[in-house]
Length: 116
Image (cartoon, rainbow, N blue to C red):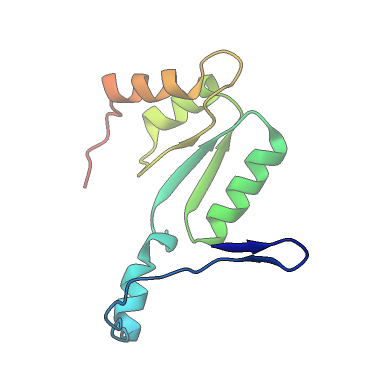
């Protein structure tokens, strides 16, 4: 680095040389992006803030997840006990039972349906 009053500062940046990354096929790109394709996955959204819940539900729906909404963990539990779900999207801090307590409850007492 060199610096001169009235002229400014010059930085020299040296980056290591790397091998060229080979081009990927369409299938490889699609496989890498598979996480953004929720087709067939059921995902309940547990969120007490209506705006955040609506945004999360819409965004996850755009990614092809089958979403449902609950405004509290207490409202979600009966649905989670009865319905099949693949993953739960939950707020952490909510009135009553929070998201951490909900996750612990789901880990201790898993739903009664058989998993495929």
